[in-house]
Length: 304
Image (cartoon, rainbow, N blue to C red; front, top):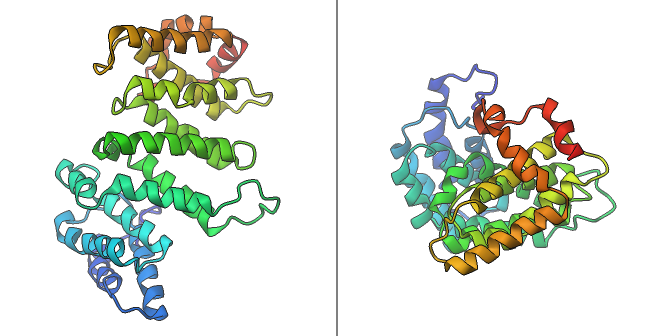
């Protein structure tokens, strides 16, 4: 009833329910029954649509207390903790001040990386029995989806956290490439946005393995239109980045070395024509937001 996906949730239901759910979630008793009630309350809060208006400041202190208490006492389940973060992050997408609270006081970057690393250590992506997803797999996907929907928070991360996240998503891609299509596509989509941000240095991006992933996908025997679109966009982003010196921390000679190395990697795979022809048609293809590539263009680029 709290989720607005079918458009019938009333504002009154949300405004009445949220304070009660937060009150339940704030219960710090250590019984198993309380633990389950807290988890259910946070799951319900997580399901509130991100576009549903709430008076953000009214609920910030409560959800901050829930997250900070868990960071000290580890009283929540992983599912409850992820749900608390999701409720919080969706509420402050357009508020720069509160985004900084999320990073500086609650350490969003540190926490999401720690959770993903610990969860991934518990998953055997190559196991034979894949009919049912494990709790850990489901939680990893939930975290990645939150990162995708709330990518504006990337700017709140410390640079070293951003680099760790880039490395972690790259590692998740390779671990799931041949066994979990939805994870594979989700990782590639996230890598596109991580590559597109000017938060970290171009040298880090060049060493991250993103180019190998994009070029590898374009040479798969069975091609997926959605993945091709994302990979072409990644190569376009990298090409733009490499055509201008944006990394002030690097000496010009070092920058030139990185630039030449990246172009050679694309050229040795047969993408010399791509580098020029894609930019020639970029203005035509960018008539819609996010430079969406139309399906009619796929055959042309695949042939290249």
